[in-house]
Length: 434
Image (cartoon, rainbow, N blue to C red; front, side, top):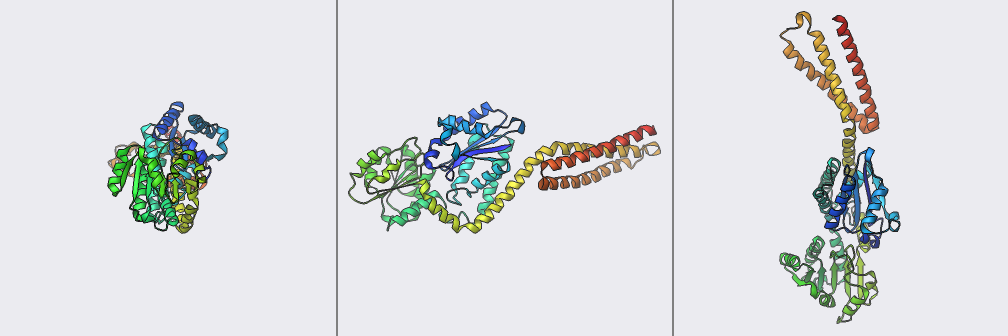
């Protein structure tokens, strides 16, 4: 039983998502708590700026209800479940598998084809490994997701062009500024998104870029790599007073700037508007700062229009990518289904081997008991039986794919029963001959 419970940019607004943000420490803590509570289950927590998804794999006998997982999310962040339960989605088994492969391939992203999501999925999986909360099923599932994403990126062009949130944000800034190359830009946050923003800004010709981070060394590292300036956190207010564009992706638990504090900063500006692109979750700027004259605030949700245009431009490749996802999801579902009939296949092998041995023993009796050909015939008979068994197993696999595991199990059970009857009759005949 595989279950995913989550919320994302499609199901929940940003003011709901930011209450459920997980940093690395929170993720490890949550996974360890879950594993301690349900030691026989497996867990991975996927947390990005656009989604929080809790994946769980458990045996049917010890399955965990989606309500239990939803309650865990509520209790962990101390947010009443009633405040967000209608934004949650639940996927089970094949739907959960298909969902993860769709997410990893960036087909469920705000910007179709963005490259960051696969790195985020990998990081989430590595954290689960570090917390020792995964197992055979989720290990296989996430590696299936990685290979699916690679196949999608290799065989389609959905990742071409401006496909990251950072790229779309910079494209928006380019549309709003006649000459973005001369704009004074402050990038707040030196994480992966901050790095991407700088890359895109340099690509469109921006020269006056300053990066600010709580850890000055991290900001300095990015500044040296891209030939821009790094400033200390304490200088941020003055930098905002002088900037044309502020791009924010800092990891914080509360607003860096509320309306009142930003209004004081804006009052020190000489002229010109301030464009703020806030893609952080939780947000760095209070939404009401957009009411300040001369300030234009765009949050991550407001990039959805550009994302929709991106999606339409890639419709043909999206269909091809969906087909790849569906095929790989089917393969995984077949693997997990085959695990259930594996023990029955083992029993069938034993019965076939038993029958072949009985037939050999009944042949090599009397004058043929010490025949020199026995050493040649025994391995030959086993090879023939194994080849026939292989044909039977292929047919069982076909039934499993087309009719489901239950039908395949019925078929194998029927074969086992017939084999047992043949074996018992052969044994009775042998005893009568004696």
